[in-house]
Length: 334
Image (tube, rainbow, N blue to C red):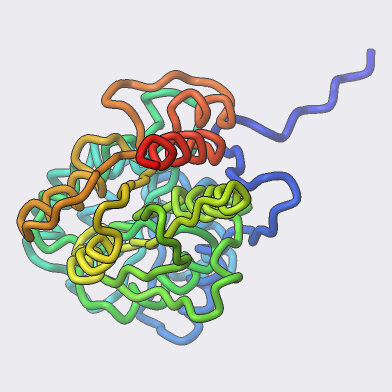
């Protein structure tokens, strides 16, 4: 009897790239290798997830600087803190759910309170896996936004990740970065002036009918939606906000004021509770900026398991759903 070929795809490692879209394989792993060639302080540490966070690329190049801590996220964080105290720059990888839910107190007490130079890079943020609530970190930003001293990065694509790695090495202090892994889309190449900077939001597209402020993979969705909306005669600005904390308050306020009287959307791959949307909403209230404010994000509930395209449609973060929501609200105001 001939054995059936083993399938090589799964909801766990499904790509968010559209068919035919340009991608880069394992941009984080390769960028960290290049950074480590220049900086001998860099070490890589993981909690049994090197292959699924692309850190195995680093481990293959620098086996003597690669530490496999086993299925013990609390130990990973504590050991990373020890490495930082000895002058190393440790990059720690796990899944976002394990970093935020399981290892929170160790990050807080061992790393953030001491302001140690530890970089936590976590895969499967938000709805980037179909494996259900045990692996969907829909609330990680909400959990970490309240932690003092912790910088939070939510990159959009392969270019963002590559540039963010170098920025994290240069930055002295604890960082949490949400990781898109595997075959990661290249979205920002079409914007030649773009350069990732910690704490800086940047306008990618200009339009007078609406403003979308976005982070992470939702910046990709916003750009795609803006292209489709332009074909309908709706011109949309897109502001990419890859750093959630510290927030680029001045740029955000300036962009919203330029769209006075027009709808403002915040799009994020995260629950609408406690993430970028609420951070922007609170900022606008503090600054006395009036705006017709809308959130595009995941609902405040445990999400279903399933195929990612289906789930993205169901929970409103696919390009199609973004186009529908923006077009509907713009049309209502016309």
